Length: 173
Image 1 (tube, rainbow, N blue to C red):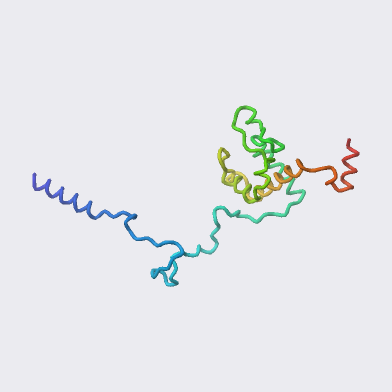
Image 2: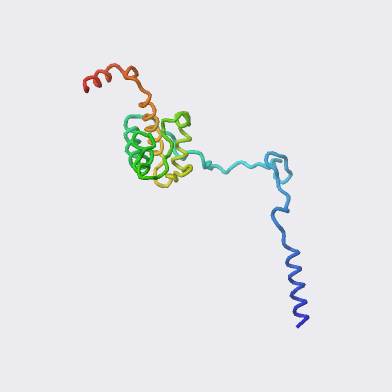
């Protein structure tokens, strides 16, 4: 019995002694030299076709009336419930007690890049959950274009409107 316990204790010691942690191994620092790779660099090029997580997977389409109409439609479906139809952060869920998102008319969001807005739609931010699995990339760009239109409309003056359109607006009064 004692020989069995001795053998078991010896085996446990041997197994514990063989344990190695990854933290104890040497590592290569980025952008330093190394003899491990034939080109002498530690940093490797990503495989061909790799797309960075923050990079949109679809090219940004040109802004057209059709794109803005699509953006408004998608905005009204996915965004207006929180952000409000004019982007003032007064959507229906906010009026019922959900925390208010930022208004699109704040200086911070007016200065945010289109790619930042696209990224927030895709990946979420704060309390906003990601819509990357619900909204196609082309529709995300359409929403970004529509948000920009909302922002421009808020600051627009009648003198900014082309003369032909201004006459049509005046006739509508």
